[in-house]
Length: 123
Length: 123
DNA sequence: CCTTGCCTTAGAGTCAACTCTAAGGTGTAT
DNA sequence: ATACACCTTAGAGTTGACTCTAAGGCAAGG
Image 1 (cartoon, each protein chain N blue to C red):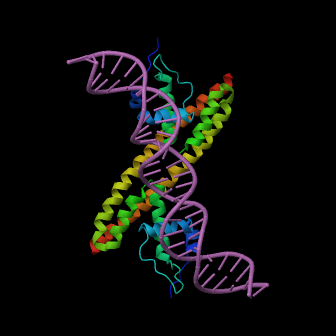
Image 2: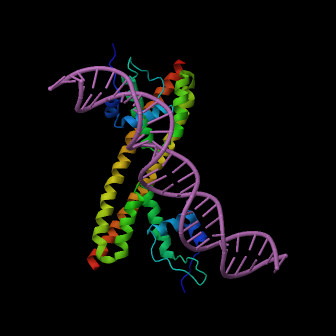
Image 3: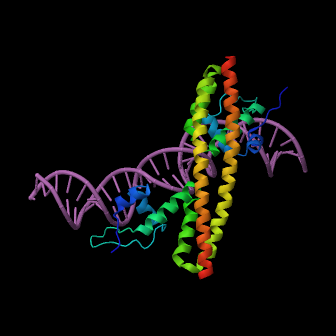
């Protein structure tokens, strides 16, 4: 018998709130979460991986709308694997660009820090 | 005589909308923008640099509330240079951490892309 | 003189992504 | 048996950062 989790345990395993999990289910980022005899949600190990994956997509700036698309393709089964791969490859490009841009900003911040040091010496 | 810009020119120079510039002035991210005879805002070269700086802070995830703090210190003059430098150094750490985290996510995305390729071969 | 395209203000509306509330049910400990 | 911590739902409220609207003024072209 596989271990299952209730919503609060799940939330703490994934670093989100129970509210967020309910919300994600409502907007179909989570599908097929079934209930126990009391109507409580039963989460499984596989859900942990999926939710953490969603959190990483979010951390890289993917909007929920795009995750919904991805989730819908996933729901449709393995024949959408190529399409999902393409989405990920597109997103990969964006993340790489974002990293580049952040690196540029780091340079700018360093420059500003140096300028402030100069002002401190003068003032 | 120094060249001045009207709000729309300024907006296009900085890659924002005129609405945003008015909003930034309202919340004191922009201070001391004075008006011409018609009451129109007069922007200067120095404002371009400042607004671009704000855009870069934003791009690195700094919330407007924190930029407001920074802008207030700047308004107070050179004796706040050290405090501003500290803010920038703190923020620099966060940006560096963000880049690290994005790099980790890139690895995860690559792993997922590979898994989808496998599914494509099998399906 | 009239249209067009700027500009002004105060304040309302939008959007994403939660976040919380109300009203009620369940399960365990004292 | 009653307090407590959990769970459910539908739906309302919040936050951050804009974005737009209404009502009106200035200035050049036809």
